[in-house]
Image (cartoon, rainbow, N blue to C red; front, side, top):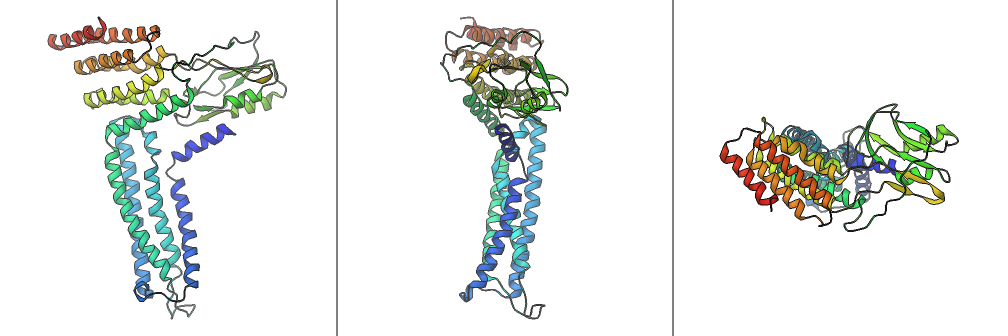
Length: 429
């Protein structure tokens, strides 16, 4: 249930529909409440009253204007998503959907439109069917105020949208989400972790297979431990960020459980599979996003080395947070001898390869970018604990490969010497 709720929360945050829908419902409720309040108010100052025609005119203008503004807001949102996908990376679009400012502005606009419709239907002239003049003065005043708020919200939205296309803000959003995920799941820096017994029992065990395709978004470890019987073991062979393929095994249990269909159902329910890759438990996806932005910037169609530099150093902030922490445990032990054996999500060396393998190749023909890359590798090495020799060796290996691909890139001799000097200055000390 916890995994399902977390997955639902992530879908709600990424939805452009939920908040506007709630604001539409709020507009209906507010309109009805204001009509009730108007019926109980006997007299208002003459400056706050309206005629039937003026009330209808105000409500109609506010409703039509907010509906037009709603079209502008949706159009600008889709334009931003399209530009970000083509200019930076399709993977970065997921973060734009999660921006709460956009959905709140849309909610204000469509909520105001709905409110005006509810109040407008209650306005009556003395010659109409009911025979009684009805002008909800308070409700019209509130509609006027909401119209002004909607106009200001649209102006704020346009300002926010213009600034949100700043590549540094897009990269900062991906960086912050990744760092929050790392700090929430990974052991703290300097903490000594003890490796529990992660060896599986002998025998084939009971195999659980995926039933649908999609990205693994969340794994509820506590729920998986709760599924097991006393002294039982479950070996999980998937983690958040991997792709599920139907009929492929992803878990194995010892001993053979009773009620296997119910057991399989509960295990599958604890592993949430969705249509898109998210950062619910997958900080590596943040690394992938930042690498993709850098690769897109270095592509011949974009050719924007400055954006690549920006993405590289934001990537360095995420990697520094990851490399300072010990890897995630490979085994979780519950009460009564229950064991959950986990796959190795990513070693520090694998994270370094994920970050730099493609980037150093793309930067081969760009000597300035190669120098930035060597500088970043040196900075990451400086951030490490002196005892972390394997990670330092992986960084030096990437530096050597960066120099090697630059030497094979047919660069002018002067540019190649710049790269060689940057390497010697940082790594031949």
